[in-house]
Image (cartoon, rainbow, N blue to C red; front, top):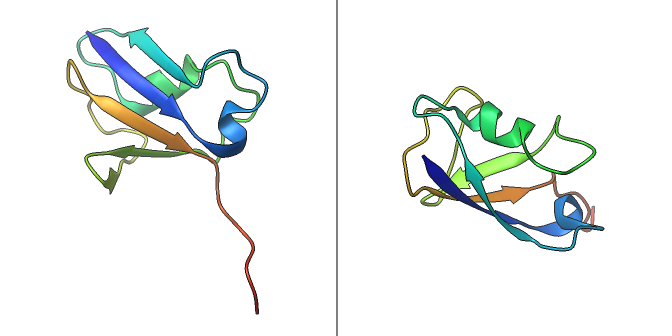
Length: 77
């Protein structure tokens, strides 16, 4: 199945493309997609589909569009 990925923030840093398409097996999970990303730090990435954050073991569907974010920090006290 094909899944489209859009990387945001530091997760896209240093890459030629911030949008990717992955070819995954039919029973793939969020973690399977994250494992194929060409990024250094995969441990704390947020994966979002249809406005909802997905767990690592969430099943993906053919044609999914996933947004990938690193943790966000900062702001005022």
